Image (cartoon, helix red, strand yellow):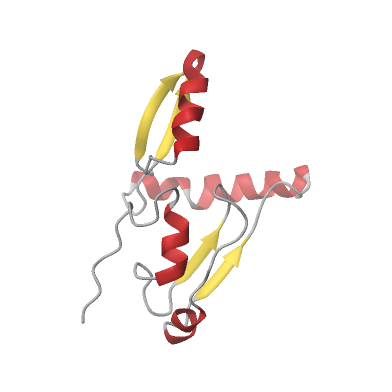
Length: 124
């Protein structure tokens, strides 16, 4: 029996738990990079899917890095990644909603409800 495609509503509050439990959107020999958590620090992972698909999972955070290291990363990002947006090799992430800074509490409430797919942007 074929499995239906993953839907963003499959997991209720956050997309990540469903992706980790099924890995349906990850290609064989694919990579998953974790750079932040919003729905907690624990996930149930289907390790058999990781093994069968030969997946690589990597995680990192900038918070404990030194200012010098963050500066080197920012320079490399500007030099190597930002130009890819201009050539359409990379696309900006989807924006779910934009809020004026004065409505930050409303934006935060939307984020806490977990009903969004994409970025929530505050502007001045």
